[in-house]
Length: 372
Length: 180
Image (cartoon, rainbow over all chains, first blue to last red; front, side):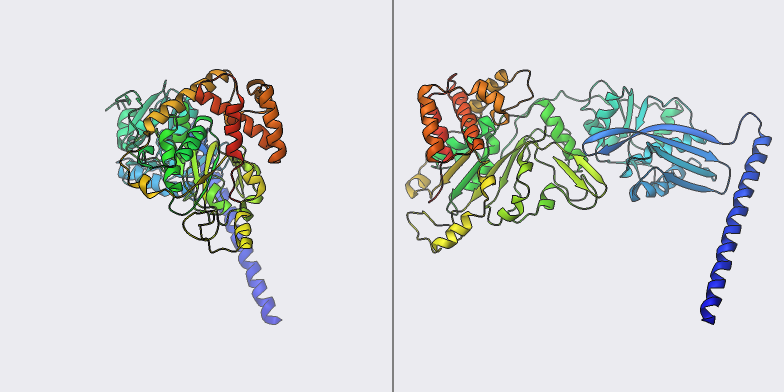
């Protein structure tokens, strides 16, 4: 009992001490700030910059305003606005990238707000906009960025890395009448799928600063070629399938009207082969369909680097033992987390041998209905 | 389709065509003329029940895929190339697009009841055939509509405006396949 009281008393004393210390620090900061204000009258020592970036919710992009405030006080760098771990860690990337680009990172109190503050933000795509905001607020660069969007993950040395979901982000930028989008160099071809918008590929943060100061202006991206539907190759051709004429007829009808097919047969009769061959008789995707599919690939990080536009209808063959969560995406986050496979939009989906299908499917009879 | 998780819910586009493949029974040889099936009848019934009724009802086309004979397998003569088939499919889709112009429909499978009433009109012989089919195969309301949609697609492939009894019977045939 005695020991307990002793510990509690110590604990309370520490708590009071800490609280006192916090209050003391707070007033000291206030005092400094007011002193500073008196010092540079009219100029003010808090500086604010606003830069635009994009968030992804599902497949839809959304403009995010990155507000950077630099004030006097104990040096700190905080990011608020419901960011996930990747967003919180962007502080370290931004700090290192600015330093390693030959610029100075202000040792003052920096607050970054990602507005609207009630929408969850995920991923490293805000790095570039936060860095630009810090540089603007600390007056290392100047310029009007109210009609520009900055997207990209920063490397510690200041180069911009490939970022997922660039296509839907640029698409929303065009909807919101943005003029210019700055994207990582290797994502420029993907971003340029959206027309009527200037895409500026950026290699490093230093290049962007040189662009802003007018020292070395960056070139905007010009698509090298118009999008032609060049020959898509298919793994299986119906020519390779011997016999089974009635099944081929059934699949032709299915492809013509987008009907669902169930094939029942002995092992090795060619069911799987013909399901794969179905891809080769589906009509080519329209540009809108291709863009939608590309968005899914882009958001889930599965877009091949060398093909900015996916032209082939996605084909996915989930195993019959897959769970519902495995099929539509599981985990705590709704959307495209790790390992999330692109949902087969406008394509075909093959279910291999439905052995243990029934129990898990009973509950989800309705998801068959297509959402448009 | 909408995915709801702890952090919120998100709607993704999910328009797909399902192609499923299954064996007729556990050993896989039920109904095969050359190899005997080793499953008991109750095992076969249990196996086939694994696809639930509601799921099965949504397959417009159900087709048996039998073993390929050796003569066919070894023959040099292949079937039509995918290219040729794709052209026919594209023509059928173009007819559908012309029909659905101004609507949010992409293919016959997307048709709702009002479109089915408008575009899948049967003549008298067709009506009689349909009546017999609904009774004989105890088709559900959804099954009835799906047969009509399938018949519409077959007519589109054939380049015909009206769904005749010959086309309708092919649609019904695809609906009624099941290894007994």
